[in-house]
Image 1 (cartoon, rainbow, N blue to C red):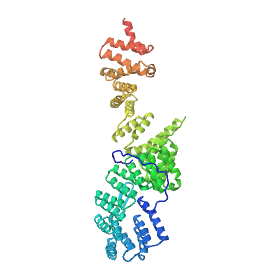
Image 2 (spheres, one colour):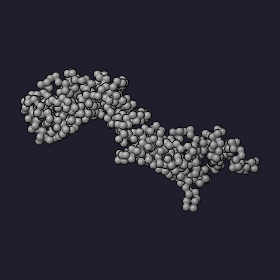
Image 3 (cartoon, rainbow, N blue to C red):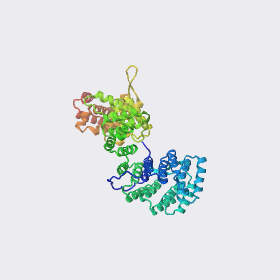
Image 4 (cartoon, helix red, strand yellow):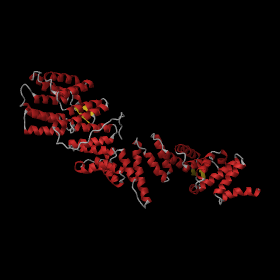
Length: 569
């Protein structure tokens, strides 16, 4: 499971978008981080209509896609078409060396294009300045340079300002300047430059998204959301803003909103990339819309079939949908196809699935499946910081009367800083109580006083959490009674308050009285003996005896205790 940021709740959701749009253009694809697709669109255009600009655009697409060698091949094709005073493709070729940190080739080539353009062409200066930003790439909540080694914020600002001086109305230059100032750790100026790009006519959705990204990086998430919403208001079909909102809400654990926005993103972008479809299914799983997650995978089976992760998501979802057989089938398939990617949660959901199998009429088969399930949970439990799997395992061990395992498992839970709930405490107490009755090598009963003490301590905590639960009180009494020889247990009086409380809790309820008959008789005999041996209060002894006989008139033990009194009268 992942660690999330803690922030103030973000308000407001964008309206639902239902109209699908055509395949995005190259600029929008780049804004989405879909550079490979953008490069393909641009290269097709260059093949169909070759010119110095279209060929440069194709090379630029591959440069942004992180493929400088492919970009260089396109730029080489366009060099012969360049205007002598505007060596656009020659500049592109020089930039491929710059982003590869090959300064030996980059520096003289850049000097040559600056010389040929006399350092006055705004487009050449712009392209060089932008390259020194490393091409900031927004996406998935981050803005990072595509080529970190190429980043030189000072040079970027210098070249871009020179470009802006010569082309004051170019919004793309202002946008790149915003990137450069962001890299120079001057977010305020960056936003100002982005706003200038907006004033100069740049697509407002793109600008608002960029501003939202800046605020995201500064952890001002409310303003990030506000700007993403502005981007959507400016153009309801501007897909990148939906994607960023989905990722932002995912980051802050608001999975329903994340799922809503990624649905809208996929709808308006028609992005059918495998990673996007997997992300969509993942968000719906995290939003606990397990059936939707399964349906998304099933409806995109062709696109997703080769990725083993789909089996994981479906397996986890089916486990949560209480369809254990399908869960086991899918998770097992995932582990077979990608054993190196196994993680603790795979074993968690696999274990839960095995333990969720119902076997009507076959207790032995149920026991086998539960045993397998616990084995898998044991692999996951040490790594799960959100769910106390030890508690689930202890419940199984307790019911299976495997008390040493139940105690050890709950001890592990405590070592992993899980707080025991009332049921854990009760099981821990009862398992220790059971283990308090040991046998020596001759089969003689040996009382384990440590176990009984542990039982009483756990049951005392359980009693605080649930004071009206009679079994807790009863076994506190019995733990304090059986920890000692009978007469010593009476004389030290440790069991007295609990036997007394237990009698008051159940003796007046017929159903409970019948259920706990043996325990009530033990309690009455204890109270009679205590008043005989310790307080020597004959009246109290007589009262306890009378009450016991009134409830159990046919009990031979109580009758024997009463017989001497009758004889003496």
